[in-house]
Length: 160
Image (cartoon, rainbow, N blue to C red; front, side, top):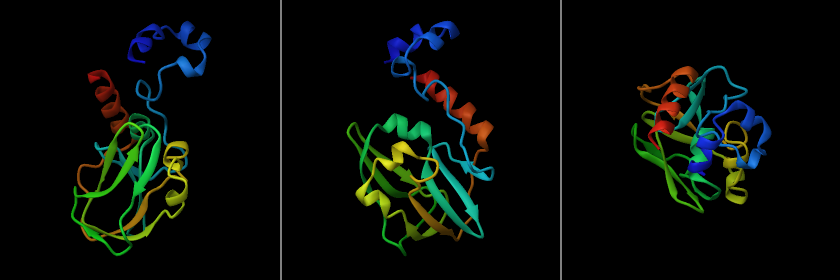
């Protein structure tokens, strides 16, 4: 697929090529839809915070890199984590991805849908594919806004 990416750099070729052959979000990050108060981590998590509770998920870029998710190993409600601890793992047909706690937190809810339909993380990473809700006991550091996250993703994609 990396070889095909160079072929489709021309805008005329991109328009003419079927979507299946076009480069995916690796080359052009998808815009996060639905939330204006979301922050991102360099490790490709997104967090939407309301009243001290954060909804946590992975970005579209991360799910694209991971591939089809077949199992979500989510923590138990009540589990406590320190910032940057592995909070859960996502198993795909290609790899196992770790999701990190953005700050000291306690899990207050997990997305039960993912037990039966883990691929929801792929089909709707920015809404229905959220992983868990956490109550923060510490401050998040190292967060990025949408624009800074897009720059980070573009730099990471160029390294590949």
